[in-house]
Length: 194
View 1 (cartoon, helix red, strand yellow):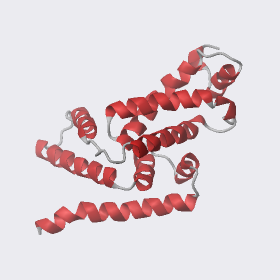
View 2 (tube, rainbow, N blue to C red):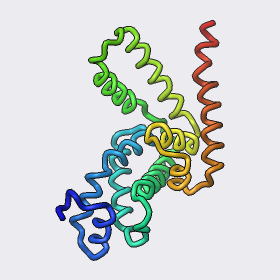
View 3 (cartoon, rainbow, N blue to C red):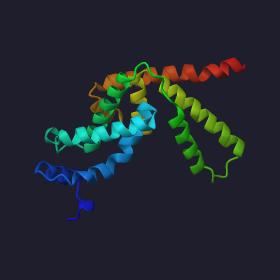
């Protein structure tokens, strides 16, 4: 069986037998998702790259503790989330940069530029998306993480609970509270405009 067709479980078993090279397959498979999650949690490209790299270093070191009958993605997300929390704790007093998110929004807007939408509508949608991104980044860390995992990574409540190692009810509570805060934050300009 070629490396490209090897399942995650097969790759992990090979690494556990002392092979190091197969781990690069897992990195190639998951690096974009881990980087994107790190970028959304940290809001800074350099920190996200460092956190993604650290996630894979930690994952490799912990392969012996990974349960092969479990899916790999939630396990990697848990490591990435914990790594990002560590970065956030270290830079508590630094302000969060939105430059990277704005660049990401510009890239996303370019992807949709070919749509037949009215250009003015695209600009308004981009402004609203930017406003939503800022509001999400302003949420307290646990709420922000749950929102990003749910809506950006499209994870189920159960998967989020597994990744964050919190009860399912806590996930639902965090999402509910995050929605309430986002509604309040995002409706303020509308109240001011009236």
